[in-house]
Every structure is written in C-alpha cells, then in structure tokens.
Length: 68
Ligand SMILES: [Zn+2]
Image (cartoon, rainbow, N blue to C red; front, side):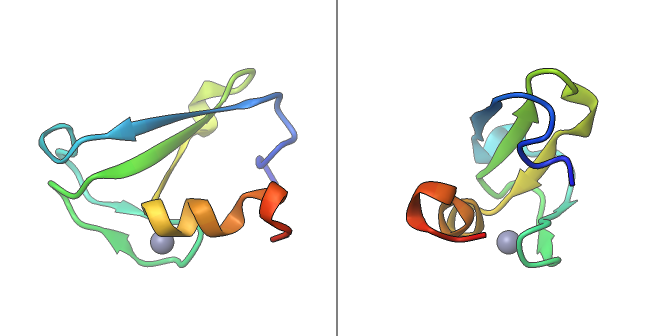
C-alpha cells in the first residue's frame, strides 16, 4: 500500500469551504461529502497518491496508537 511506503506522510487539514468534491475515505470506504472538513494525507515522495480521510478515520489508523 501507499501508506508509509513513499516517505513521510504530510497531513493537511481541509476546511469545509475548501472541499469542493466528494471523496472516498480509505479508512472506512465511505463518502466524505463535499463541504465537509477532512484530512488529506500526501506521501512526500509520491504526492499523486494522496488520499482524503475523515478526521476520525485518520486518527484511528495512526501507527503510534497501535492500529495497523
Ligand atoms: Zn472514513
């Protein structure tokens, strides 16, 4: 998977007014509706592989909290 394989992940917070499209969150495979605040996780070496995550899904997957 892209996660962790392409260098450090840069996480940016997307504000509701910046979210002009709906995305699929890879943490739960559900929609992030447009105009919903969320995170975008960008591998620094492969920025094209960025993914959009719900806040709660990203927080749950953080390795430092022991989630694989
Ligand atoms: Zn999610």
